[in-house]
Each structure stands twice: as C-alpha cells, then as structure tokens.
Length: 350
Length: 110
Image (cartoon, rainbow over all chains, first blue to last red; front, side, top):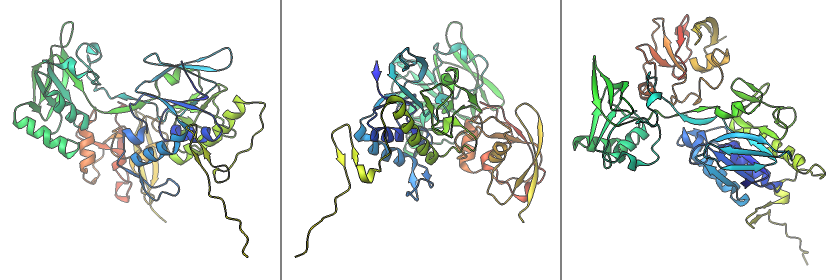
C-alpha cells in the first residue's frame, strides 16, 4: 500500500503544481497517471507547442513547462505510479480513501485530488466491425513486449510517429512488417520518415498506401486482414494487427466513482475549495466544472492552491494556520533542501 | 460593427441548429459548436484546436468556397475515422463573412 497525505490522480500541470502547494503545507503527495511520463496533455499531445498565457512566461513550450514544474516540485519528493490507470475509489472506515489501479497497485490517503484533465488517454480504435473480437488474439493497440512479434507477420496501421517508429523497430524482429495508411505522407520526425523510406527501399517494410484495413479474418485468432486498396479489397495473411491512431482522453472509471458528473466533468464547489460531492475528494483543473469554468492551466494552478489549503484543514481540523508567502517562509523541501530569500544586511556606518 | 453570419449546424443526433457567429473574433467552426453546446464537452475540440485529434471533424454540406487544407489538417484527416470527401477539421475552418449560410454536419464521435 502506497501512503501519502494527498493522492493526486493525473500528473498534468495542475496535478504537478498541487505537489508544490501541498509541500508548503508539509503535506506529502503521490501521483497516479495512465501515461508512462508526467505532463499529461502537455507531454503527450503537444510538447513542442508554445503556450503564451502562463503568467511571467511570455512563451514556453508545453514540454518545458512540464520540466520546470518537475524541477519546482522536486524538493517535495513526490511519488509516482505511472503507466497505470486509477480504477477504483473506496472509502475506508477511518474516512480515508483507497485507490487501486488497473494493475492492482493500491494507494491510501486521507485526501484525493482528481486532476485528471479530460480523462485517461485511451487508444483510438478504428471503426471496424469485428475488431474487438480479436483484441488479445492478434490485435493490440500498445506494444508492451516487442518479442511477442518475433517471426510473425505484422500489419501496422496509422500515419504518425508511433506507426512509423514501431514499423521500424519491428522490421528487425517480425517475419514481415506491413504499414498501411490512407495517404503516402506520414506525420513524424524527419529521421523516422527517412528511416522508414530506407527500410522500404531495402524491402524490410512493405508499404500499402493509400490503403485502409476494413475487415479481420480468423477462426480462433487473427489470420488475415482485408485491406481496401483503391477500388479493390486485398486479403493479407498476418498474425498481428496493430492499429496506432494515437490516444484520446476518456473520463473512464472515474465516472463510476459516485461523483456528480456534468458535461463530462466533475461538479465541484468553486465558491469554497473545489471539493466534489464526496467530502475529501477534490477535483481540480480541466476535469472539473462549475459556473464560469475555464479550462486553462493557470486556472488549474489557482484551484490546486485553494484545494491544498482546504485539504490541510481536513487533515488537521484542530490546527489553525494562515498562508505564508514563499518569499517570507522560503521553501523547505522534504529532501532536506531549503531555499530562502537572502536577508538584508544591517550594519552601522561609522 | 463587425459582421455576424448565420450557420446551419447538424449535431450528432441529426438535429439542425440555426446559429450566428461573429466574424471578427478569429473563431473557428469547432469553437462555434462548443459555444452553442452542440456537442458534449470533452467530445469535441479535445486538443484545443491544434489539428491534432480530429474530434471536431465536420462534413461541409453546402458548396461554400473554403480555404485549402493545410498539411496538418490533411495529415490528421488521414488518420481520422468516418472520413468523407467533404470532411474538414472544424478547428481549421475560420468564421469569415463569405461563410454566410454555411451548412455543416458533425462527424460521429470516435
């Protein structure tokens, strides 16, 4: 069981900044995120895109914002459970919560802060009638263990980085790799496109463009695909089909936790502390809704700050505390580091 | 006073809405749809309008002259589902006076 004072679901900018505000109150945080890296949408969707409305940063790349936040919260030694999706929330007799991930990792905390953005990122699945029937029987949307494709005939569909990069990687592992895309142009890093071109020229990757997988064939497991090429349908024998069309966020299991949901977001009390209808469970950032809500990173930062003050009062109901400015109090990390403003020199002039 | 144009947008349930949109706010079609709540939040404009998710795919059903697709829109549409000849990404279609009377149908959620 992983224990913390505030369990944060979602390691996007709002979740990360929560660690800082909680740390100032000596509250320890742990974060869960379905993605394998922190940053949420900033790192998954647009790391190289600029953001222009972060106060005091006229321009900052989303990936750099994530790096800066990680640097800012490092003194507070947050824990991370990455690549796992928060699946269930259970209230305990003592009022605390246990959150279990899809891989069975259990976390316990008196306060849960849901900073899940638009939800956890799930693979976008092409609308092919019998696709679901072959999931785990030849069809996969993630590649966890490339070795399972050794000496198999593999078909990858998609036109972005992951389709290119996995085609390149598997060309050394699989018996054959066929990349199917509706256009002959690919959206990826230049060196990936060039490498794929080179492998195609060497006959190590077969390219079917423009092409579209429209059907799956197989008794127990996948044995062939139907691919629309121009006006005709070709049948291609294969044992694995990996559609890589990127990820899309879905609210997912959070929607089943008994929280009040409106417009695909969690309703909170914005007049007070961003608490949900379950006392002790807060929702901050893009995942929440209230009258006048704006889905902006800077609003998420504000919500995180107020939420932490409320969490402190919930965890220590008998203590009185007033917020202290960091310029006055400095930043005292859990790792033993301390940052503080230099003191003015007071010295007499003789 | 900047011009306001009228648009006809058919939502994912097949209902057509006659709405107006200003032409001086640099708004795009996806934002207009969101402004009128014509698709549930979280199902449209997921990437915020960067041509990176295709959740705002729309079928243009009138014959208005639209600006050409840029590389990013073309690439994203090539990875989108339910694509037709008249598919566009709503986030890349900006509201200008010459779109007066534009007719649009939202593509299914994917």
